Length: 240
Image (cartoon, rainbow, N blue to C red):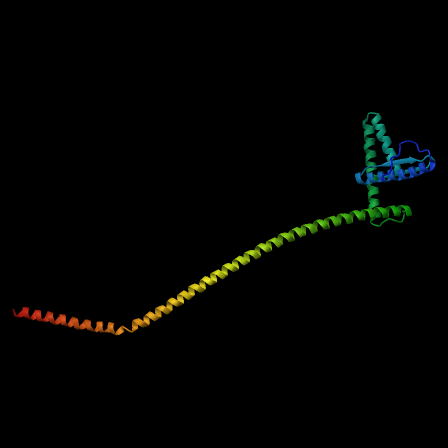
């Protein structure tokens, strides 16, 4: 069940008025501090309670904030002459110098240096600020680690897909090698069969070698007969 809206008017009950003042005062001061840190703004807040008690917050020092406010107010109400312009920029330089000094001092305190002059309340504020900063750092670190893990998982999936593709290619090459080996075996078996057939035919031809020798031996005899016939014809022609 949501909280009902409070009418913006004076609270008659003193107890409720005090409780509301305390809550909203703390909220206002917290927002002022966050505005100063997040936006690098110079913030000054002054609060007087109904009992006359003072509550204030300043990002640097309340005195410098009030002086800067007065200078800015005077500059808007009157035209700026050279002397006032010089004074304005001198004040700006002094304010920036004080801000730099405060930032350096705050940095040293965060590093654990120059803590002797701080009160217990200041140390508690510093501790809370460090815890908040540490929480932000841890959150940023966890975010970066999560992003790196996602990126590594994505790269791992890509490598896994590449390994699957390479495995498929290796299987295809293995099948091709098996087929080539089978074809080579078939060709070698055919060659072996042809060689055996040639050897067998050579032995069969060797059984008929005597016939060839007979033919070669008969050729010189035929040549002698032709020669004798030529001699006889020469002789008869000589007698005639």
